[in-house]
Image (tube, rainbow, N blue to C red):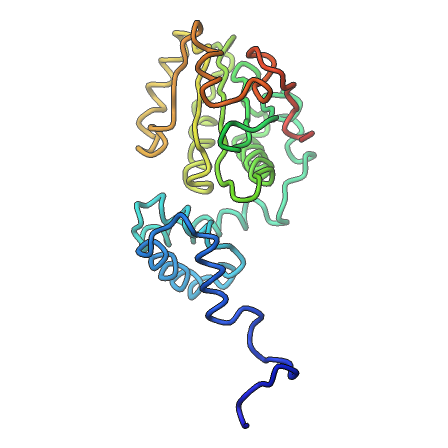
Length: 264
Protein backbone atom coordinates (compact mmCIF):
# COMPACT_ATOMS: atom_id res chain seq x y z
CA UNK A 1 0.00 0.00 0.00
CA UNK A 2 1.33 3.40 -0.96
CA UNK A 3 2.70 5.40 1.91
CA UNK A 4 3.03 2.42 4.27
CA UNK A 5 6.49 1.24 5.31
CA UNK A 6 6.64 -2.51 5.81
CA UNK A 7 8.71 -4.00 8.66
CA UNK A 8 11.35 -5.09 6.14
CA UNK A 9 11.68 -1.66 4.49
CA UNK A 10 13.96 1.01 5.94
CA UNK A 11 11.91 3.76 7.53
CA UNK A 12 12.60 7.35 6.57
CA UNK A 13 11.51 8.54 9.99
CA UNK A 14 13.78 9.40 12.88
CA UNK A 15 14.95 6.41 14.98
CA UNK A 16 12.68 7.78 17.67
CA UNK A 17 9.18 8.39 16.35
CA UNK A 18 6.78 10.62 18.26
CA UNK A 19 5.45 7.84 20.48
CA UNK A 20 8.89 6.46 21.41
CA UNK A 21 10.18 9.99 22.03
CA UNK A 22 7.25 10.45 24.37
CA UNK A 23 8.13 7.25 26.24
CA UNK A 24 11.81 8.25 26.47
CA UNK A 25 10.96 11.74 27.72
CA UNK A 26 8.62 10.36 30.36
CA UNK A 27 11.26 7.90 31.56
CA UNK A 28 14.00 10.53 31.83
CA UNK A 29 11.66 13.01 33.50
CA UNK A 30 9.82 10.50 35.67
CA UNK A 31 10.02 12.80 38.69
CA UNK A 32 8.41 15.67 36.75
CA UNK A 33 4.73 16.51 36.78
CA UNK A 34 2.71 16.51 33.56
CA UNK A 35 2.56 20.30 33.78
CA UNK A 36 6.35 20.52 34.03
CA UNK A 37 6.83 18.14 31.10
CA UNK A 38 4.52 20.32 29.03
CA UNK A 39 6.59 23.39 29.86
CA UNK A 40 9.80 21.52 29.02
CA UNK A 41 8.39 20.78 25.56
CA UNK A 42 7.35 24.41 25.11
CA UNK A 43 10.78 25.65 26.14
CA UNK A 44 12.56 23.17 23.89
CA UNK A 45 10.51 24.26 20.88
CA UNK A 46 11.22 27.90 21.70
CA UNK A 47 14.99 27.57 22.10
CA UNK A 48 15.45 25.19 19.17
CA UNK A 49 13.75 27.71 16.89
CA UNK A 50 16.25 30.36 18.00
CA UNK A 51 19.40 28.27 18.33
CA UNK A 52 19.49 24.91 16.47
CA UNK A 53 22.35 23.70 18.71
CA UNK A 54 19.71 23.38 21.45
CA UNK A 55 18.72 20.09 19.84
CA UNK A 56 21.94 18.55 21.17
CA UNK A 57 21.03 18.96 24.85
CA UNK A 58 18.83 16.55 26.79
CA UNK A 59 15.55 17.27 28.53
CA UNK A 60 17.23 17.24 31.94
CA UNK A 61 19.30 20.29 31.00
CA UNK A 62 16.22 22.07 29.69
CA UNK A 63 14.47 21.23 32.95
CA UNK A 64 17.32 22.59 35.10
CA UNK A 65 17.16 25.97 33.41
CA UNK A 66 13.38 25.96 33.58
CA UNK A 67 13.39 25.15 37.29
CA UNK A 68 16.00 27.83 37.91
CA UNK A 69 13.42 30.35 36.70
CA UNK A 70 10.50 28.83 38.62
CA UNK A 71 9.07 27.18 35.50
CA UNK A 72 8.75 30.45 33.61
CA UNK A 73 9.32 29.34 30.01
CA UNK A 74 10.28 32.78 28.71
CA UNK A 75 12.78 33.47 31.49
CA UNK A 76 14.17 29.93 31.42
CA UNK A 77 14.63 30.14 27.65
CA UNK A 78 16.42 33.48 27.86
CA UNK A 79 18.73 32.09 30.52
CA UNK A 80 19.46 28.96 28.48
CA UNK A 81 20.16 30.82 25.22
CA UNK A 82 22.53 33.13 27.08
CA UNK A 83 24.30 30.04 28.47
CA UNK A 84 24.79 28.61 24.97
CA UNK A 85 26.46 31.82 23.84
CA UNK A 86 28.63 31.83 26.98
CA UNK A 87 29.75 28.25 26.42
CA UNK A 88 30.68 28.88 22.79
CA UNK A 89 32.85 31.76 23.98
CA UNK A 90 34.31 30.19 27.14
CA UNK A 91 34.69 26.59 25.91
CA UNK A 92 34.95 26.92 22.11
CA UNK A 93 36.56 23.50 21.64
CA UNK A 94 34.14 21.70 23.93
CA UNK A 95 36.74 21.38 26.69
CA UNK A 96 39.30 23.43 28.59
CA UNK A 97 42.88 22.19 28.54
CA UNK A 98 44.74 22.18 31.89
CA UNK A 99 47.51 24.12 30.13
CA UNK A 100 45.10 27.07 29.79
CA UNK A 101 44.60 27.25 33.57
CA UNK A 102 48.01 26.17 34.83
CA UNK A 103 48.27 28.94 37.42
CA UNK A 104 45.04 28.00 39.15
CA UNK A 105 45.73 24.27 38.93
CA UNK A 106 49.13 24.81 40.60
CA UNK A 107 47.37 26.24 43.65
CA UNK A 108 45.64 22.86 44.24
CA UNK A 109 42.55 24.38 45.77
CA UNK A 110 39.82 22.04 44.47
CA UNK A 111 39.58 18.34 45.24
CA UNK A 112 36.98 15.67 44.53
CA UNK A 113 36.37 12.15 45.75
CA UNK A 114 33.47 10.06 46.90
CA UNK A 115 29.70 10.31 46.78
CA UNK A 116 27.23 11.43 49.43
CA UNK A 117 24.23 9.37 50.57
CA UNK A 118 22.21 10.62 47.60
CA UNK A 119 24.91 9.64 45.12
CA UNK A 120 26.10 13.19 44.55
CA UNK A 121 29.84 13.74 43.84
CA UNK A 122 31.68 15.58 46.61
CA UNK A 123 33.94 18.54 45.89
CA UNK A 124 36.11 20.27 48.51
CA UNK A 125 37.37 23.82 47.99
CA UNK A 126 40.17 25.30 50.12
CA UNK A 127 39.74 29.07 50.15
CA UNK A 128 43.15 29.73 51.69
CA UNK A 129 44.84 28.23 48.60
CA UNK A 130 43.19 30.68 46.22
CA UNK A 131 44.97 33.83 45.11
CA UNK A 132 44.00 36.31 42.43
CA UNK A 133 44.97 35.18 38.97
CA UNK A 134 47.87 37.18 37.53
CA UNK A 135 46.40 36.68 34.06
CA UNK A 136 43.21 38.51 34.99
CA UNK A 137 39.64 37.46 35.66
CA UNK A 138 39.25 35.34 32.52
CA UNK A 139 41.80 32.79 33.71
CA UNK A 140 39.89 32.10 36.91
CA UNK A 141 36.59 31.98 35.00
CA UNK A 142 38.05 29.26 32.77
CA UNK A 143 39.22 27.38 35.85
CA UNK A 144 35.72 27.52 37.38
CA UNK A 145 34.21 26.30 34.10
CA UNK A 146 36.83 23.54 33.90
CA UNK A 147 35.99 22.40 37.44
CA UNK A 148 32.25 22.39 36.90
CA UNK A 149 32.56 20.52 33.61
CA UNK A 150 34.79 17.95 35.33
CA UNK A 151 32.36 17.61 38.20
CA UNK A 152 29.34 17.20 35.95
CA UNK A 153 31.16 14.54 33.94
CA UNK A 154 31.52 12.52 37.17
CA UNK A 155 27.79 12.45 37.84
CA UNK A 156 26.47 8.90 38.15
CA UNK A 157 23.56 8.04 35.81
CA UNK A 158 20.40 9.74 36.98
CA UNK A 159 22.25 12.23 39.17
CA UNK A 160 22.30 15.95 38.40
CA UNK A 161 23.70 17.57 41.54
CA UNK A 162 26.88 17.69 43.60
CA UNK A 163 27.71 18.40 47.23
CA UNK A 164 30.34 21.00 48.08
CA UNK A 165 32.46 21.57 51.17
CA UNK A 166 33.97 25.06 51.25
CA UNK A 167 36.81 25.00 53.76
CA UNK A 168 37.78 28.52 54.85
CA UNK A 169 40.46 27.55 57.39
CA UNK A 170 43.54 29.78 57.14
CA UNK A 171 41.81 32.27 54.86
CA UNK A 172 43.09 35.86 55.10
CA UNK A 173 43.22 39.15 53.27
CA UNK A 174 45.81 37.76 50.84
CA UNK A 175 43.14 35.35 49.61
CA UNK A 176 40.49 38.03 49.17
CA UNK A 177 39.23 38.06 45.59
CA UNK A 178 35.73 39.50 45.66
CA UNK A 179 35.59 39.82 41.89
CA UNK A 180 36.68 36.20 41.46
CA UNK A 181 34.13 34.96 44.01
CA UNK A 182 31.31 36.84 42.27
CA UNK A 183 32.40 35.54 38.87
CA UNK A 184 32.41 31.98 40.18
CA UNK A 185 28.97 32.47 41.72
CA UNK A 186 27.63 33.90 38.46
CA UNK A 187 28.94 30.95 36.44
CA UNK A 188 27.46 28.45 38.89
CA UNK A 189 24.05 30.11 39.03
CA UNK A 190 23.70 31.25 35.42
CA UNK A 191 25.44 28.47 33.49
CA UNK A 192 25.10 25.40 35.76
CA UNK A 193 21.75 25.98 37.47
CA UNK A 194 20.28 23.30 39.69
CA UNK A 195 23.66 21.55 39.89
CA UNK A 196 24.51 22.47 43.48
CA UNK A 197 22.73 20.14 45.86
CA UNK A 198 24.22 21.39 49.11
CA UNK A 199 27.16 23.45 50.32
CA UNK A 200 28.75 23.15 53.74
CA UNK A 201 30.93 26.10 54.76
CA UNK A 202 33.39 24.95 57.40
CA UNK A 203 36.13 26.57 59.51
CA UNK A 204 34.92 30.06 58.59
CA UNK A 205 36.94 32.74 60.46
CA UNK A 206 35.35 35.97 61.64
CA UNK A 207 37.29 37.91 59.00
CA UNK A 208 35.65 35.93 56.22
CA UNK A 209 32.17 36.92 57.38
CA UNK A 210 32.84 40.52 56.29
CA UNK A 211 33.39 39.33 52.72
CA UNK A 212 30.44 36.96 52.98
CA UNK A 213 28.13 39.90 53.73
CA UNK A 214 29.21 41.45 50.43
CA UNK A 215 28.64 38.22 48.48
CA UNK A 216 25.34 37.19 50.08
CA UNK A 217 23.07 39.70 48.24
CA UNK A 218 24.21 38.24 44.89
CA UNK A 219 23.19 34.70 45.82
CA UNK A 220 19.77 33.71 44.47
CA UNK A 221 17.13 32.45 46.89
CA UNK A 222 17.29 28.84 45.66
CA UNK A 223 21.03 28.72 46.27
CA UNK A 224 20.80 30.36 49.69
CA UNK A 225 18.62 27.48 50.90
CA UNK A 226 21.40 25.01 50.08
CA UNK A 227 24.18 26.71 52.08
CA UNK A 228 24.93 25.61 55.65
CA UNK A 229 27.56 27.08 57.98
CA UNK A 230 28.94 24.31 60.19
CA UNK A 231 30.21 24.76 63.74
CA UNK A 232 33.69 23.33 64.30
CA UNK A 233 32.56 21.17 67.23
CA UNK A 234 29.80 19.64 65.09
CA UNK A 235 31.82 19.30 61.90
CA UNK A 236 32.09 15.52 61.56
CA UNK A 237 28.61 14.77 62.89
CA UNK A 238 27.04 17.29 60.52
CA UNK A 239 28.90 15.96 57.49
CA UNK A 240 27.96 12.39 58.44
CA UNK A 241 24.29 13.33 58.13
CA UNK A 242 24.86 13.59 54.38
CA UNK A 243 27.97 11.43 53.78
CA UNK A 244 28.82 7.88 54.87
CA UNK A 245 32.13 7.62 56.75
CA UNK A 246 33.59 5.50 53.95
CA UNK A 247 32.94 8.39 51.52
CA UNK A 248 33.79 11.24 53.88
CA UNK A 249 37.11 12.99 53.11
CA UNK A 250 39.83 11.75 55.45
CA UNK A 251 40.70 15.29 56.56
CA UNK A 252 37.28 15.39 58.25
CA UNK A 253 37.64 12.04 59.98
CA UNK A 254 36.44 9.85 57.12
CA UNK A 255 38.17 7.25 54.97
CA UNK A 256 38.28 8.85 51.53
CA UNK A 257 41.54 10.47 50.37
CA UNK A 258 41.09 13.62 48.32
CA UNK A 259 42.16 13.85 44.68
CA UNK A 260 42.97 17.15 42.90
CA UNK A 261 40.16 17.88 40.47
CA UNK A 262 42.49 17.93 37.47
CA UNK A 263 43.53 14.34 38.29
CA UNK A 264 40.03 13.01 38.82
